[in-house]
Image (tube, rainbow, N blue to C red; front, side, top):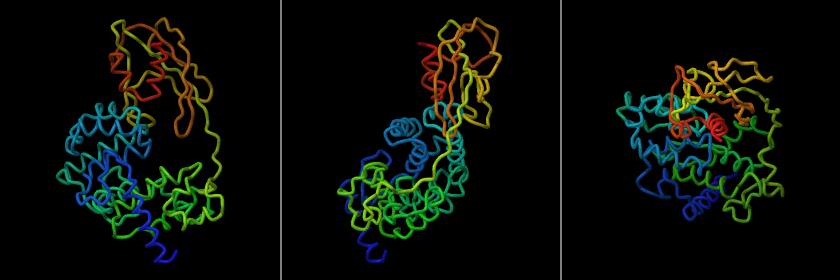
Length: 341
C-alpha cells in the first residue's frame, strides 16, 4: 500500500470513527483534548483480554466506584480483589492486576509511566496492554493489535498465512498504518471497526469505510480471513465438588493453592480433575448425597463436576450462601447453584 493510500485509508477510518465511535465508560470521545485516565484505560484493557465489552462493563463500573484510583486499588486485600474479579476469568490476571497497581503506587508515586517501554516494565503488563495504554491514554504512536485488529488487517491485506503463525506478519502490517496523528483514536477506530463492521462472520463490507482498499473483499471471500490452523480437540476432565452446609445458611469454602488454575481463590472443596472419574475422599465424613452435575469449559479443557451435598461442621471458610454465590468463580458458582436447587 502506497503512502498516499495509507493516508486516504486513515482519513476515511478516522472520519467514520468520529461519527460512529462507541460510547464506553473508559473512553474519551473522538478527538478529545483531554485524554482518558490511564488507570481506567489499563483496567479496562486487562478486563477485556478475557471477556466482551457487555460483560466487562459492569465489572469496570463496580471496580472504579469502589477503587477510583490506582492507589486505592493497590491498597485492597488480595482476597477482596479476587472476590470482585470472580466471573472475569483467568485469575492470574487479577493477581497481576494487583501487582501492577502496587508497583505504580509504590514505585511511580501513583502515576502511570507514559511510554510504551516503561509500561511494559510494570509487572503483569504485556506488549498489547503497554501499547494500548501508551496510545489511548498518552497518545503515543504505538501499534495496538488485538483480535479485532488482527482480523481487520488479515482481510485488508488478504494474509494467506494462518494464525497463530501469521501474528508477527499481522503486527508488522498493522504498524504500517500507525502514524503520529491521533494514535489513540486510530487504535480504538480499528477495534470498533473489527467489533461492529468487520465481524468474524457476515462482515458488513457495504458499510465499511475502508472497503475500497480491502484485498480480502476483492477476493470475494472476506470471511475466509484470517485463516486459522485447525484446533486440536479440547480434552475433557471429571471431578467432584462437595457442598457442605452448616445449617445456618453458610457454605464451607477452602482457599485454593496460590499457583495453578484459579490460584489463591476461595472455592468449594473438590477432588482432582482427571480424565477418569476420580475415586476421591470427601473433605469430612458425612451423609453425602448426589445433587447432579455441572459442565464448565476452560480455555484448555472442559470439565464435568459431580456435585455432592451434606450438612456438617469443620475447619473451613464458612461463608453465607448469598456471599458465596456472588464471589465464587463461575465453575464453583454453578456447582453451588446446583446444590441449592
